[in-house]
Figure 1 (cartoon, rainbow, N blue to C red):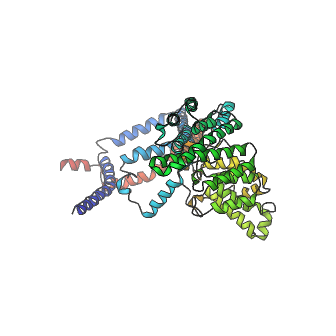
Figure 2: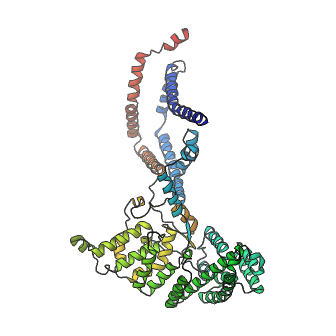
Figure 3: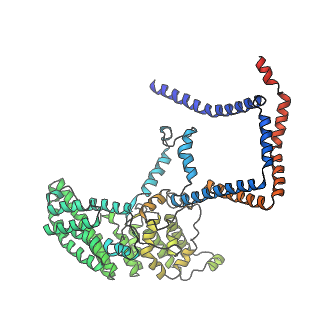
Length: 549
């Protein structure tokens, strides 16, 4: 009974809402009819005649000032709309009308319970969009002290945003702390240090922890933030490795003695994996690439289940530097799997290997005459797959857009991931002869690619997340490219039209006066015709007859 009553109330509410649309229309026509009936007592015709006489007495200078002022105001609105669109990606007038005016006019709220029940297909697509808009740790992130801070010292710009650094602080607290840290004084200090916002306070806390004990996480913090060169960072990571291995061996023996010991062992494992991975990255940056490859392979064999660090992407980059393309293909065969999450590194490295087989002899003119061979078709399909996954990458690989330092976190399929990939892999594409020429054919991405053919449809949340991750001095790449809002086009047309009217009225006042009169008479001709017909049906004395009744 309760459900039946609720259903009846919902139907009654929907009927009332539906009827209000037509009641407003009926009310509008009733008001027009009432004004027409009262035109004689209200002296509407006399007032219109007075207004017409007043307008005829105005000089052309007034119309020049009127149209010029209209052009100026519309121009200012156009400038503001364009600035707002460039900064926030939407029209200010449209946003205000949707957010504030639409509810007042009876618009349906998208967040209302009635609209919350969607189909299973919509729910699945929404969940996929949310998962694809998840922010990931950049596996090739730079060192703050040795690289990011050096950039700040030279340029005076901050390469990292507060949002990005806050995500890193959360990662450090997740990986490097556990519930039993308060039992060890050095770890208790570092637990507070990872939450500290001030870099100098974090560094001071790390030194304080080292005075108490050989703390691996303290060495990590100093290597990441205090060391000004990669050589200094490597020395500190080696000290961290020595301390971390000791903690790992002790916690490994006690991990089955309780939940607290298991959590501590998990923390020590994360610390050890992080240290070894960063040591491999130091070796790669210092030119010891073969040593770095060996360290990464050993690390992946020792901890095969820790895929959260994405060490295989570091390995792929190092192997490409050695031009060990067979080894790169072997890594891709393991990780380029349909059940595993994709990345720009996986997709574009696979495309690079396919392009390498045909790029040195590939010619668009020859291919158009004879058609594509099997190898060329595979290369084109691989590039199309990569471009569909992340359409921002070609702009950076083809150097159509300037690179910046990659952030510490990336959004898959977003501009931040494209920057992180191109920053390290541009040299590998340049090394393969003809690969960039083959990629150049995809510089004009098929529109609309966001429908999705090989992957899920392109998510709509990438622009917002990338603006949070990337510094303000970088112009975020947006895909699909947004069309100009209607109000920008409207204000641009209004500004141009009124400016033209002002110029013509100033130069040819008499001719424009004749043109304006002819235009207005033509415009009001249908209205006058309707008024004459209505006048013949409803005489002007109808009001007097109604008063007698």
